Length: 301
Image (cartoon, rainbow, N blue to C red; front, side, top):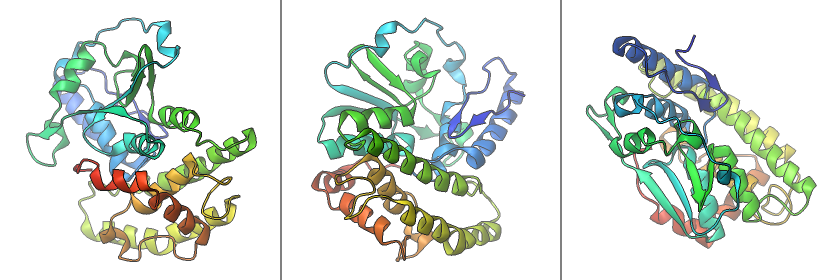
């Protein structure tokens, strides 16, 4: 079935040739599936939103199929440009990496609006649709984010994050540390996947949602965080090695940029996890990080 196919946090758009009613119904199923299966870079909203924003409709049904040139894998030249929607979503970690590195870049954001507030079937994204119809997302299979610099162009949020972390010296100081930074990232992915699989975003049964959240924040998440705390090889406020790495950024986002206070309470998450708390404090006290968190655009998610 091509109604919805997901692999980790990635989702494939629905076929544009489907009959409108069939495609609409399939879109609803795809969005629901994505909410349960997607890996989430910032919150349970990210996967749900990603599926909804990328499902073809309107002008996107006439995609240009031009061959991607070999130069997209060539050297990056000039200032970077990061294209994504005007939300945090799966591009926010990359933006944080730019901020920590003090690297100037173009933060290109496709505007979004709703015909009916909160109804993703009525979302409007004209600029994105125009660029996709013109073939500007071919390198990314019709999706965003896309990172570019000169002829160089890179799709997929996790590939972008690891590329930037490597470029900015945030993948450790040795091959072994780089492997561990990657491993910690996978640990964080496991935690986010576990939460995303609960399908809380868009759940209409308030009592069921409250029950699931209570178990997650009261029982399941604390156990997973304590296991992660024990697994970290670093010390003195760093997950790996002796300087801020991509792993530290992911831990910071898990602690400070994923759950709301309404969900966790004023105490937040991570009680009894001294290593993780220290990592979050290290990243949060960085001057560039503080500036970004204070000045970043206020978005709906």
